[in-house]
Amino acid sequence: MTTPDPLPRPPKPASRLRVIPALVLLAVAVAGAIWLRDDLGFEALARHRAELIAFRDAHYGAGVAVFMLAYIAIVAFSLPGATVATLTGGFLFGLFPGVIFNLTSASIGAMLLFLAVRAGFGAGMEARIARHGGKVARVRAALARNEWEVLFLIRVTPVVPFFVANLLPALLNISFVKFAVTTVLGILPGALVLTSVGSGLGEVFEVGGVPDLMVFLRPAVALPVAGLVVLGVMPIVLRSWRERRKG
Image (cartoon, rainbow, N blue to C red):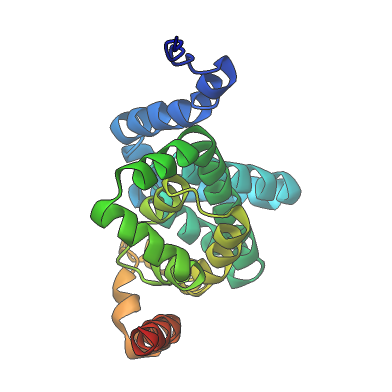
């Protein structure tokens, strides 16, 4: 006499709790996109530049801490204003140490978002992809063979939105170490450029202008970035070519 298969066990409470941080981040991101867009834009920076400079001059250490915490929150909650935050870092603290503050804050915020989303959804998403197979599973397998290169490319290529480059690796359950290393290295060129632009905002404000973000299209910036993209693509191409030859 065969015994009936046991009923599937309900999800453990702990597994349900793991999605809470990711859901909180999502809720804050939606609310921020609706209510904070005007408060985190370039116009807001222009309006409050005098107060920001006065606070920085009177309380430099506190100014650095407040700035970095605000930047981390903007990235972790996927709020609008990451680019303006980077410009602000250059405006308040110069190219150096502004780029250090910007790079550190953006990296920490990205890692916090990554950990929250991966803890809540990464393992489940990866299991579903493996279970269903098909084209998505083949793409995931190809990514697994080129994780370092692909993670670096989506960071260094300006066309990939910053929050997308944070969410996709988390949903695919990518290694945290790989994500962290490629994040820091991949956003460094853009952080340098935007911090440099931000360091010259004083003159822009004086004439009532706006920062020239088309700087990324100038040969002095675009060519080195293109070179980094080529360096990232080459190992993928060579690995694919070797696999075809073996096959």
